[in-house]
Image 1 (cartoon, helix red, strand yellow):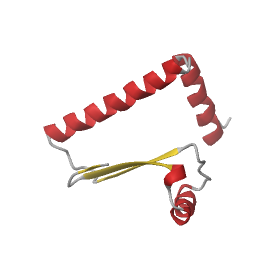
Image 2 (spheres, helix red, strand yellow; image 1 turned 30 degrees about the horizontal axis):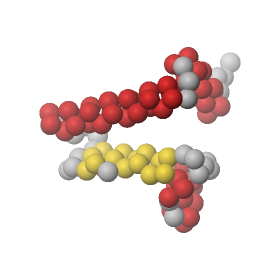
Image 3 (cartoon, helix red, strand yellow; image 1 turned 135 degrees about the vertical axis):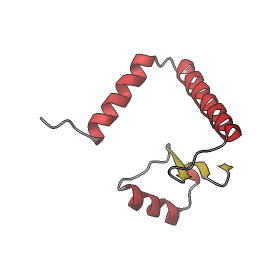
Length: 99
């Protein structure tokens, strides 16, 4: 978990979240969360500009996360096109296009 005066970021495996807290999260999100998912929560103050050190640390965390995602995909033979298609499918389910 990362914290400073302006921001708090936390990531939890759903399977590790206590039942009562999981129900609360599901109510907040308006959907069920599954055991194989993770919950990422970021609390921030809009309009507050972090200092350079904080921005660099955040960029490094993002780079590590993206590197881990790339390794995960490569280990499982998932192409960038497959990942893009999965995201597009998920977005269509969440926000169907209205004609």
